[in-house]
Length: 390
Image 1 (cartoon, rainbow, N blue to C red):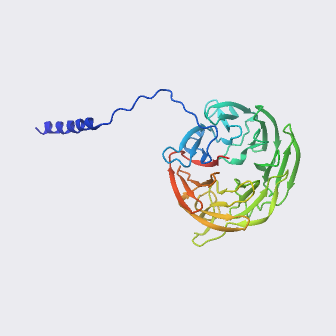
Image 2 (spheres, helix red, strand yellow):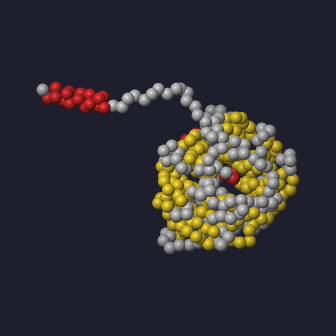
Image 3 (tube, rainbow, N blue to C red):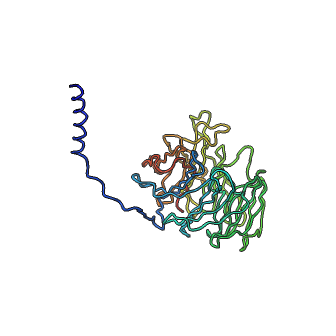
């Protein structure tokens, strides 16, 4: 009798569930393909997901910072320590990638893959010779666009350092420039770039119409490598690149001419009580700006209260807002957690985007310092680099 009662008890809930179950979903056509707008809204970001659990399967997530229901709009593959750039003028995304014939071993191929911004489908690729593309956790400035987005510059490291010049429109290589002891690429002037060197100097190089070196200029003692080393990803206000040091010093370089010009004024993010032992910048992409082409704007710096020697990649809990012209901090934004990268959208009223190494992305109103909403951990496993739509 007990067995019969148990059997009845098992049947009744199933029958009740069947009576109240919703109607089946309508069948969907397969395949179901859609496209993105050719011109992305200014609220969108390109989020580089390095995907530490499977680096050969990195990707770029296209994310709408306004959409809390479906913020992920699409994905582009970005294999093996890839670097990326976006060109709205060309309606294209570019990834500099590395592949092996046996996935993790075998013959190596470096290439620039060209993706359509609307369909997210590959349009072509340019093979890079020599197996020398720099493989590292992604920096924005190891792969850059110059000459009105018609050329790409790719950083190489073997550990000899050089830059490969690529004609994107013509799908061909233009040459290679040796850069012993100098790294990273900062577009400078009409058709050139600047790199910072290990002895504290910088070199600015201008290229001719064929992509060869037309001129070069070295400036010494522009960075105190021992006491004020810079984070290598700057914030741009107009043509001025603002770098923050490990100790919170802000230094600007005017990149509008053929040679980078250090600005005479320095600024600091400031100090505050409550540091254990002190407040310092910390994270991966630690500085952003809401600057415009007229050179006016504020800087946003990711700060950690646990700043000490070696803490510069640990992430931060606040963003300090600095007016670089006045040379002073104007506000502080509490993030409510530890974040590793920040960016500002290029909207009329920009929003601050903060990403944590484990995938959390939160959106803040920089005017009030309040969190607008959270996108949760729905778009990327490890959002390393945030690129606002230009």
